[in-house]
Length: 202
Ligand code: PRP
Image (tube, rainbow, N blue to C red; front, side, top):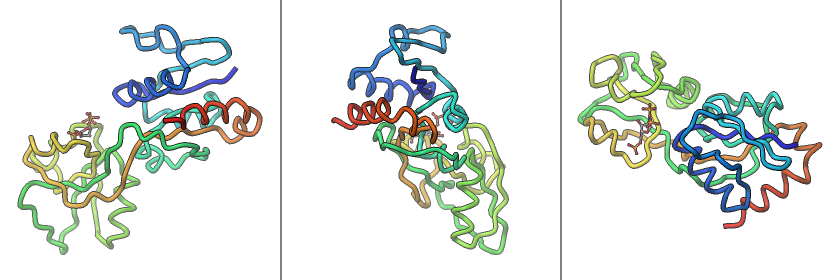
């Protein structure tokens, strides 16, 4: 049996379509219901919260899984990153209200869902920051004065534009990655390699 963790939500739908195209599918998996675990032959697939995929894979509950590069950079799990699936291509960026000027004598207040990524980025710039960790709708923070800037995912840029924010620095490309548990990769290498081969064909 091989266990595969899929990220629930927008990215999950795109990634599941890639698996289907590669010949892997689990009946009912994209139906509108609350079911989480699906078995087909000797493959079991389950939906987990995107941030939790590396947890399931690192602990071996899932042999492989799909996680956004953003989540891998944020959590630094001890897993193998096997393949860039190219799905959900977007960037990690610093954004601020139109006309924002950074006053480097003040500590910069940064709202983000990705405190480790933000800390590392601003450390590389030698900039003092105060991190405010939020769970989504980050655009609100600078609008309401909770933060000066945000570090967030930008895909089309629509969310920023509609909230009068602009990109200051797009510093990291992101996309979905296939990851594997290290010992699963050793003991189930045949089947994992077969999955990679089929997914890697365009
Ligand atoms: C993400 C991100 C931005 C938006 C960017 O949010 O946090 O808000 O997508 O996409 P765009 O550049 O195409 O507008 P998501 O929809 O995942 O929800 P969240 O705000 O709850 O994180």
